[in-house]
Image 1 (cartoon, rainbow, N blue to C red):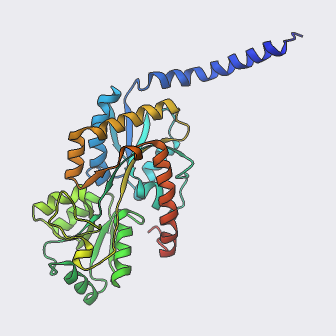
Image 2 (image 1 turned 30 degrees about the vertical axis):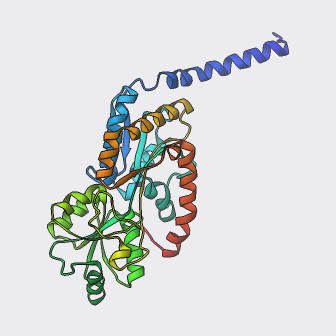
Image 3 (image 1 turned 135 degrees about the horizontal axis):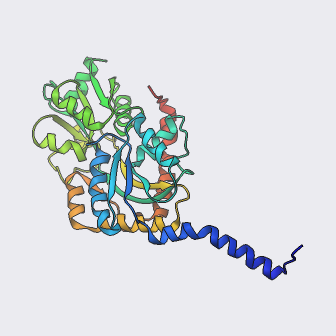
Length: 332
């Protein structure tokens, strides 16, 4: 039997541990060495897809590798987010999403096969919407928000309201709207927000609460009626649209925020590399201008760290979970 001194034994254990960690550390140091897949948990053309493509297009320059968007729609983003939760923690499969929905609201509504806090590593908070737009089809008889509310009260259950599923930003805003006005909608669920918006434009449904990132173009083209923005201040990109306070429905504020996440256990060096690429993208004036034109605000530099995203998510959970559970929102 071979005997080792305590010092020899410790050297052996330390060497073995270093050998075991070696490939992981080496991969982190050379990351990325191949294309990165960014899961966007909605259909192409939706708000998260549009914003993700703007940010990741610039990230490719910093990372020196292709960043490929893969749209995985379904169940208000839970299918795509679940795929990331199960992915290998090497930084080559991550997600960019409307995280106010995927990493806050969904956990209060759905029985998820993953934990929104413990199964992901935060990378970076990117941007916020400054409210959503209350939109109606062009043939809607109401021409302003007060008239719309009066028409809804006089015609209960006659309006069709499009969204991407229980817990989606539009759905939650719609619930708050109905609660505050005493109205009631017929829900129509879509795989993507862009599909719901197209059906309003076509006149197939009556109403949507649309993200400015996809709604401003048809508003500017006069293809839909816009009643207000659900924010305290007007959109810088569309200052002609009144706020809900100005239009007659004070206090109906809603917003969404976009963030990048990696599977739990992703090496710190990889998180740092991804975060730096996001920060670099958000500092680019062309990226800032494109996001601003969509009615989005880039968050301040101190809010772009993984630690800030983690703290912000927890604060949003503490704020929204009691409200959502009291509302009794259930999956269809």
